[in-house]
Image 1 (spheres, one colour):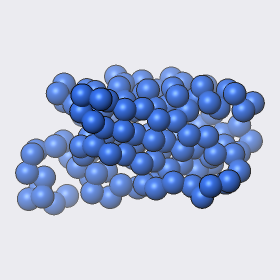
Image 2: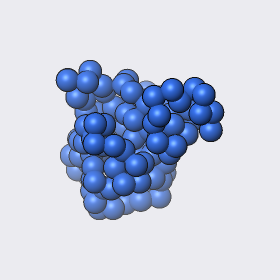
Image 3: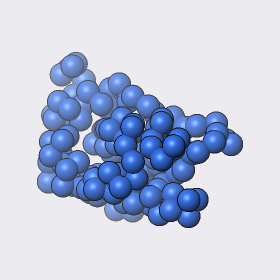
Length: 131
């Protein structure tokens, strides 16, 4: 981890995901089995989009796009990676409290975890419409 670049002192887990942003991007339009969810926080002007590709009732691949602080980006990256191999029922169990614990998100950035939960809930609602 490059601590010199982390001038604002984000927790290490957040900074590492922010710097590497695994699974950042989106699927090509028309990719089979892809469902997307989105959420935002107007006060912070952040937006998080999550795209999950389902195959045989499980997440086969995942992508995310985020506009916001390093915590917002880390939440998207963590959810995308964590989702791989999981069923919708497992995804529905993930909430802001777990995201805060896993990423050591401080109180002043709790809205980022809530945004992650909301994006996943939006995605699952859309998934239910497809099955």
